[in-house]
Image 1: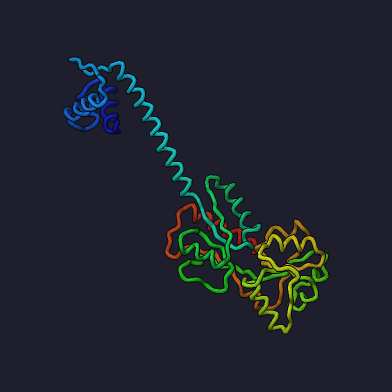
Image 2: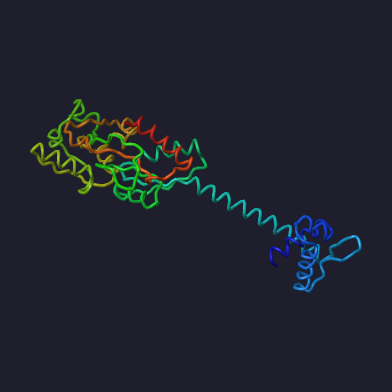
Length: 299
């Protein structure tokens, strides 16, 4: 049965006459009569008793009316469910970032935001910084948090924050009493840092070269979590990371973060990126504003 047949049938069943149904549907009486007749012929069942004062449902007609009402309610329910799905999808935010931001800082920020806006859903893609920017340009991510040395074409930089490379160590470490460190200070202790190819490793190698020293890390890994655990477990281990990456975490484990004097280690920035020329929806604007406040506090 087509939806048009059921609409005409329901209207006649409800109003009790062809003319009243025609008025409700804003069509000619003949059109209503034709649809009812066609429906009865197709089913080979009489649905109405035609009487001088109107149309009265037969027993079979009352069965169809009950079905039609259930069908209408189910369709309304399905439409409401689809609208709810669309609303949830509209409130989804996809973020791309490197491991350094995904280990602690960003999940902490997202968790706090969900407390305030529980209807917002997040997808987090943990990728290299360059790939995070590409995902924004391709429309696969709404926001990218990337460690960058320069801006990228096709993305808009919402903000840029200092992401200087610092030294993470235990409070009991021999170097913990110093206010500022130099690269050569690190050469006497076991070091954990990212693998070759990262901006951090590149800048550190440049700083070492300019200082005339060579430092080979005891442990290389692209996981900040692994680096953090190494520093926690080894009394003299030093880890390289940015302040924002471990913001709110160091005090819990009795660790300190010390700045390193070499200017090369301050060239890196943490950028918040979105697609160039994109108009951000309200829920995305709200999260960007919330994220900005957390980044400023962390810095």
